[in-house]
Image 1 (cartoon, helix red, strand yellow):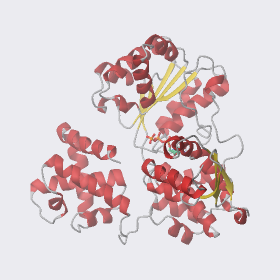
Image 2 (cartoon, rainbow, N blue to C red):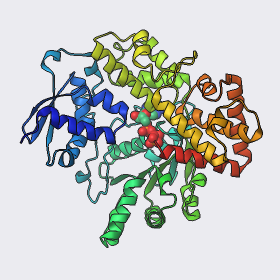
Image 3 (tube, rainbow, N blue to C red):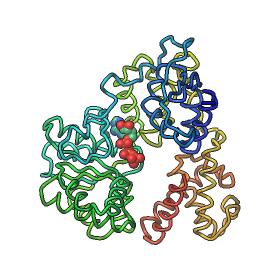
Length: 465
Ligand SMILES: Nc1ncnc2c1ncn2[C@@H]1O[C@H](COP(=O)(O)OP(=O)(O)OP(=O)(O)O)[C@@H](O)[C@H]1O
């Protein structure tokens, strides 16, 4: 064994850079330092306990999975706090309490269970904050958890990313299992279901596949919009759905759009998806965001660590979705811990500068700039114009419409502020941007053809990230 600990770590880190976002690598992995390497185990020093526990939960297994290729053989990752940093940090507070962090439903404990992914036991009704944007969905979820298979079947949640669809879906399962621990639960993403179909067809094991999926009481399928265009998967899904439905088993589905808008979805499935209740989840407003942040702080006993004015500040500036709100708290705490500073609004402004959009039009982060470039490029291609044209001041109709679409998608996908969008399109003022966003929203309602084009571009942009 000739590699040093530093070399071994740098190989794993190189691999991580190709698989994970820059943000994750820089925030969580780069601060780790290689300490010892025995050939079988790589010991990494972390700056604090929070970092140890976070990396253990999120990244250890991933790093270990890179070892056979990056180092030529399996290696175990061990994390420990760097000796000189052993003093307790504020970050420890954000670590879930013992027993909170992992799944409640261990697949092997469930007879005949085909759960391919575990549930998150923080996703309960108790931790879900209800507001105007999700009250229908939450009410339907609670009704289903009281009488599975009897009220709304299937229950279909849809809405943009990071707004609690998976949380609510899993809360139903937690509640049903709490009341009846014998319930057989299957929680699966559409991607996993698709892979299972492909593997089972390959192995000639469809009989076993069907048996497994039909022996469940509660069937939860995440991101069902990914089923579009996958014909064999749709065929199997159709039969699974029918078998479960006819047997009175509860089905819950999530998607980023309503059933009627999932492209290349067979009509018989689209109509079945809408048989029960279709409930949308929208963006929380400011008060709702504050309530969510307070609840999160309370759950992690952070009320005294993060003052209320900081929660307000985050809620005010991070508007895109709840996952981003949570990410902001984590980042803020990591920053406070690394800098050994108390959490204040000033510190939050500093720690979250890349997430915070200032009205003075701060420069965009390079990642966002890249994504804006992709949006402009894709829109330009769809409408047969040039990116330079979109960015110019020219006001011909050929350019105005695609420019408005690009602004609309920049707002929707990147959550940019109006000022920032205006700057990226030839220095337009915010009222022009508002007008553009409204025009696109209206035209999308009026014309299915136009909506189709916008959605096509949105899809290609999303898949490019
Ligand atoms: N109303 C809410 N109250 C408390 N936490 C919430 C709420 N909405 C979302 N969250 C939290 O936000 C995070 C993202 O939610 P979730 O994963 O359920 O989103 P999603 O809509 O399924 O996103 P995606 O479409 O990307 O899968 C989770 O940690 C969840 O607990």
